[in-house]
Length: 295
Length: 276
Ligand SMILES: Nc1ncnc2c1ncn2[C@@H]1O[C@H](COP(=O)(O)OP(=O)(O)OP(=O)(O)O)[C@@H](O)[C@H]1O
Ligand SMILES: [Mg+2]
Image (tube, rainbow over all chains, first blue to last red; front, side, top):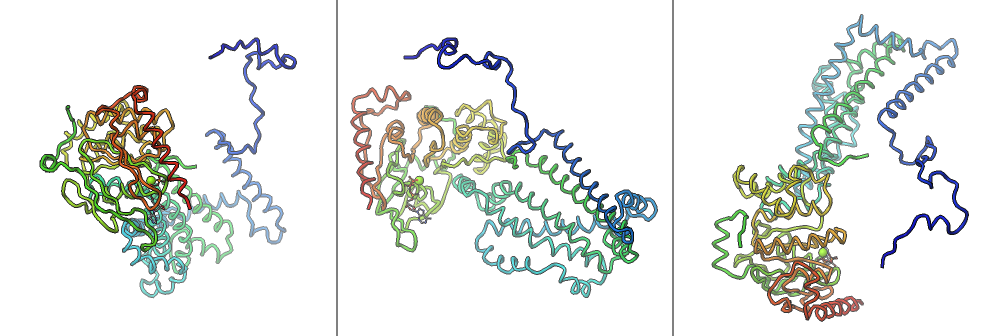
């Protein structure tokens, strides 16, 4: 049996009738929002405001650091304004754009080559256990060799050329990326592969049209993370016998104790790194709209 | 009855010459270097156009049996023949629906259904048209261009079903296909299954834990013993008198329903109690 419940009848029962206007149907007053709310996802505009605030906070600390430094050594800790001026001068008078372009070229060219090797190789190693057993021990060992230790060897082989720098970046990125792609491929649910096999798919069909699309969003994530590593290796590659590039500019500035120029160059790399990251994220949203949003 | 599935000429001629769609002979399966016995000397024939349910306690080897039939695993002893041909690996004559959702998330519903036909080499124009028909069959025509990401579990499972049916397999294998669904959706899917199988005339094997589901769907129940899996009972659901009932309440009203359900529950209890 179902009963119709009269809401007014309830009010009369129990303790005193509530004076809370909400109970009478007034708009619900949301609890006061706390700054440290658990798992709260701020709105897009609020995220931007907070992000800018974080940057300003950093710049503020930097200024404080400048004035906190004793007068005698203050030139080694220039204020924000000096660094911005140095950055402007670099671009306006010292053709810094050329160095930036060269560095971008080195990072992207080496990264493209590393990806061209690591992505297909990682995928086939993830698909075929025998290939993994054959190649993984030797390839994964390379990750533990510091890329910088190859500098002397690369200088002997290539001289102080672009190739030497690109090779260094390649070594620094490729072996890590390979391991990540291998893991991404192994993470493809086995049911996808088995479903495809029971539909009569060939091995080639499974690899190309099931494993690759299934693993691609995760592989793209790995690539995004590894290009960041590429940017961090850039300076190591360019401080050795380089005439141009952001790292070379920094080394030269260092020799003349131009701290503001060094900082301007670091800032440039940071900005370029963040821009690359945003580019990858945008590409990801465009290429894999079907993949589940990760937080 | 009209079937709209793509017919593969080679298969349909086989279908007429040999009437045993699947024969399982003396199949045993051991794991861990032979120390663990999952299936112990199992033999049975599937009958054409019959729905067979595998029922048994957890871990008794139902999934193992189904995967051996699908060709995704090999028996340690014995063998399986599909229409007289030994099974040596997976193939589109034995379609499989998994418990996990296998509709590909990078393809829309209609592209998912097309995938199965593309693998079989159905020309593009034809498969595009047929894919829509099959989506209609599982009542998803309005979601043809939606991606699995935006679908409920039941919808994802229906996409997978349409994809497999579009290949017109001789045998449809299902491993707890509705296990992950909540009660109401499960019920809808069961009714849909009856509707589809009536229409497509398929030989079906469905694994289920759910005795009520087994009685509702099956024409025959193969009950497995606790590990190592052997056939405990092979029950023909004669009380249905060769009919399939879409509405569960009609089935429950039949004489013999309660008796069978009681018997199955008792068997299940017996097997669970056999624990050491
Ligand atoms: N690859 C494997 N290695 C070792 N043991 C396995 C393997 N696959 C299955 N088994 C064992 O074989 C037995 C049967 O497994 P199976 O998955 O077929 O059971 P099931 O009847 O489907 O159970 P459930 O109802 O829980 O799904 C289980 O005890 C399981 O642990
Ligand atoms: Mg199972």
